[in-house]
Length: 149
Image (tube, rainbow, N blue to C red; front, side):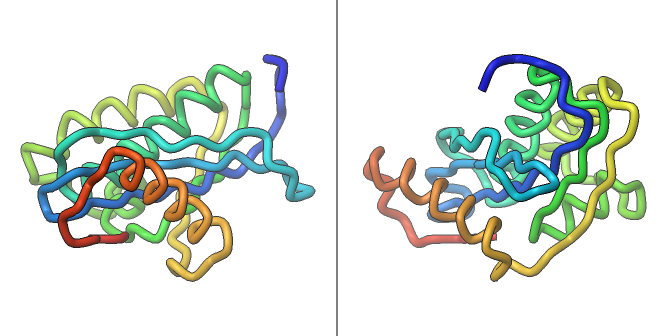
């Protein structure tokens, strides 16, 4: 999609790790209010924990929404930890997650409004993001046990 201003999008994110830590990936899906997928992508993050993979999916989605000129973003994830940390109801005490959290906080300043909502992992777009993560891990030959979000 061409780069132009889009008023509001939803961002569905997920992360997966095969082993904890182990080979990991994060994914996002950007969707319009009418349900059209604007962009989706999974990124390999190498070796990491499941929570790091969740944050990497979020960071990739926030970066893509910034590039597209989105003003309002609704973020959905099945990671209650990440959602509550980003919403400010949980502290970020993990030294591994702190830099990812701070990077996400810096990115959300590009938007007029960002909301965070936890959804069940069975949500169709979360399941789709999970499949994207696992496709990347399969392509890279990540063989450790799956740790989905």
